[in-house]
Length: 135
Image 1: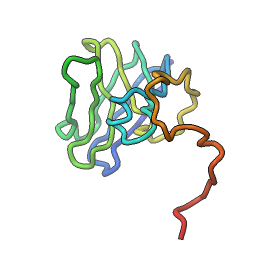
Image 2: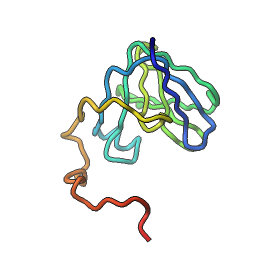
Image 3: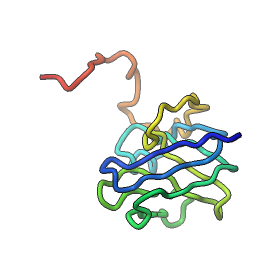
């Protein structure tokens, strides 16, 4: 029996379900993923067997493919949140981990493209940790 994973965008206009298990979970530090997320890395789950079903707002999903690369991403046209996509002619479902509405139980398998990581992405575990925005 496969597991169903629900997810949505920040504004709630787009909701989806992924039916199936994730085979891989990568944290990608390439320049494209850093630009696309505005962060240190992309965090994506991959499945070659799962199916993606849009529950609401499929018309709000925009797909972008960076020319002359294998880099692509889907996002909400209202709030810009990263969203899943079916890639490789529908043979691969890629899900941004942060778009899932439930706890991601799978731990990342690897950091990718470490030679491209941001210069400030070192020793982050050593900086202060806060529960909320400082006042």
